[in-house]
Length: 234
Image 1 (cartoon, helix red, strand yellow):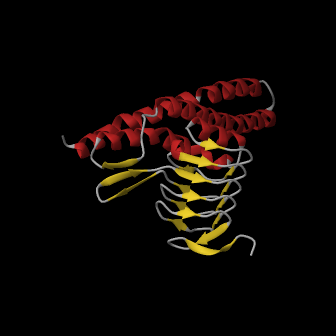
Image 2 (image 1 turned 30 degrees about the horizontal axis):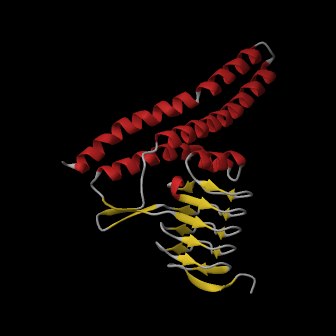
Image 3 (image 1 turned 45 degrees about the vertical axis):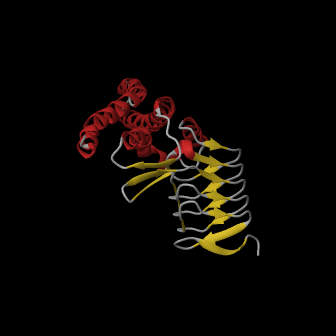
């Protein structure tokens, strides 16, 4: 079977599905905006203009929050079971993995606008991530959420990327990522699959933590690839 052709053909129904989800998420916003517009038309010009502007803003926020809820629920319920391991890139496992990311790709249109927030944490939990208390997530790139564990008090900086997958030598590699309590994943950094970041550890901004790296408790690592810099607090 020509898996490359299958994968390309599947992008068509995926694009249509994404558009449908965006549209369904817009229904509450449309109804709200219609009500505000109808009320505003009965007022003078300035009140009408103000009402329309407020309606657009609130409608956009409502659309985004509804989108996160839909994507989180569907992404959690419809995610195929994916186990840690190496699989041929041209295989049904790759197609299943790609499907598991569709909902996150759709939700990424809005996530950046409200990080960090309780709503984003709830979204990632719905997608399967294990998230402790007091966690701050400032990124929309917590990929493969069902393979990510964030302990209590973890901070994930802006534009940081945590991946539960990578592609190399014709294979897709899937492995969980564990971030210990009170650890910091710096802004713009990348954490690859199979990594363990210890309690109170720090990944410096823009660092790249290679696959299956174990950062011990209380250590700061940085660079490309990330290496030990010092003990935190020294």
